Length: 131
Image (cartoon, rainbow, N blue to C red; front, side, top):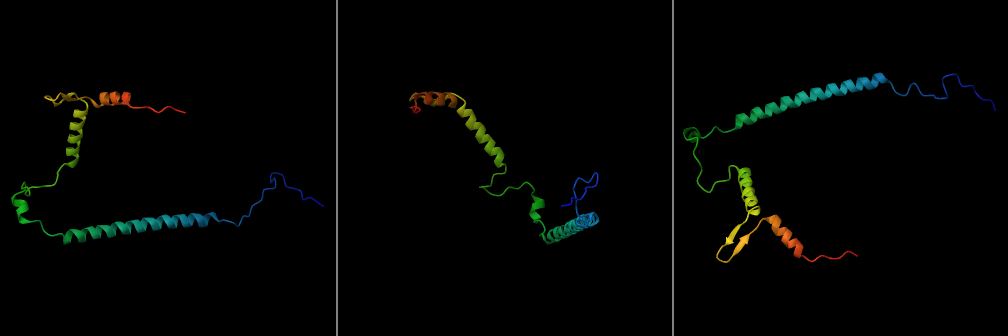
């Protein structure tokens, strides 16, 4: 069997030169980017048009809205600052949980800090032994 000599520097690595044309890939990428930019611009134009149509179809404000700007609706009203109310509630709960005080002074019932209460209860709970 005859062996074919490998030219110096080739080391037997061969490839097909007609597999991929880099110009076609670059052209496709440029066209794809241009198409994305054009479609994005059209979408911005379309949504601005929708917003203008929506603004035109809104009814005019009520005449009393300008006459009495600070007027409140009758009770019961919705919360205007629900997160502030929640923070106040949490602060009050934390104040109670981190303090000592009387629950019923005549009966001798007090409340203690939650950390102290958990330590006292944890010391009295039954513990299972490990096997």
